Length: 543
Image 1 (tube, rainbow, N blue to C red):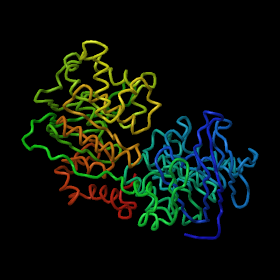
Image 2: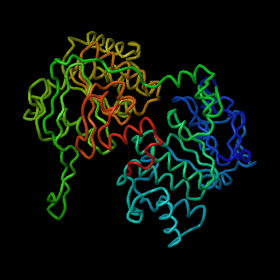
Image 3: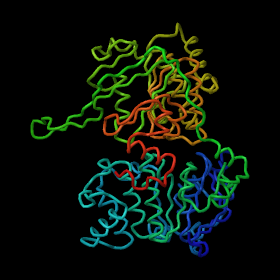
Image 4: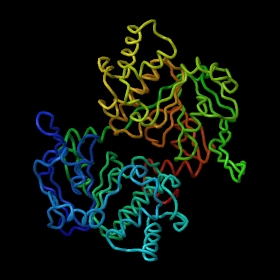
């Protein structure tokens, strides 16, 4: 870390949305400094004001709906608050750059990687032609994009999640900014890719001497990258100091709660003789690669390639691996939501030969909870309609009153007020929406639930609550879970057995305690190291 006086000074910053009786005070008098070469982490749960503060630095909030009742933001002495648009355009992407949480929504899906990285250089440096191409190649190589020249014409969907985030970093670093704002840049990434991105950012920071404002709710990331940390809650900084001070001697109750919020506890101990609910034997899902005029299959993507597993009542099998390893495809195949080969036995009956009509009654007992509750809940339907849809399809209620009572019972069981069933998804927090998604599955009294990354988009304190809820529901109802995740801390708290997947195959499986204590393969060891000791795997697993 280099301390040469603050390059960024934020004083008494306030942000409000709306005016009059409906005004929401999102940020309330926040102050902090950032020195050249230093990393300051802004930490807090969703809604704490972290991202709004970061966007305020670049004056990117949508006016007039968002406005600043007071405050000052100075970049090397230059006041940015209320500065003319022309002056702000000279700062944005040049002296201060930003990397956002989800690169797929930040990158233009219609433009090549070369065009998007080059646009920053054209606007601020006036580069064109061969000089522009050479600089784009240099940047892509700098951030570790393999075979950078072959990637110039690629569109964002042709890259992996880690590669897309590297492109975003290349764009941000194109003009060698004084400050990089990184807003949750690793939240959606696998643990090994997360480790690589964090190591890359620290290496580039050391080389370029830039300051970094790092926004995150992941305290493990803070320990890895930050020099100082400011903890935000309800629009205010409640505690600030060096990473060692805040982590070892937290003073504020909110900070203490955050540090204690990692998913804890152990899986339920299932009866070894419990009946088998779901069994897979040699399950394969191969997607053909076609070529030529007649679109003949010339090869296959082996998304799932001969998987065996058994899930018993009251038992959780965790499926882990990086993006593209086949985890979600396996879950969809077991529920017969995509075609597959091999035997899929639900309570002893093979599902593979069944028609859609014959399969429908069994679907009541086989449910799925998806990663993004906001995307999987219809914004046009009330919570009652969403949870009650299955009741209506399977004709489980004698009338509207009984259906409403069943919905109320399901909501209450997942910790939600039954009186909220006439409200809509946007009126709930992320953790509450995931509880609604669980209630939608639970109301049908299933025997088997596939949980596909159900906590990855949630704050760590909310993750802990959802894990406790799932464990409690399983103990009460004896439900069998297939728990798909790349977050091994969550899996450790919930899974009895573990299946480690890579490139569509199982590389290791067995009791989770045994695998966490003594992983047998290099790939599993790399995953474990990335989850529990990031320093051990910098560069261990490449894109």
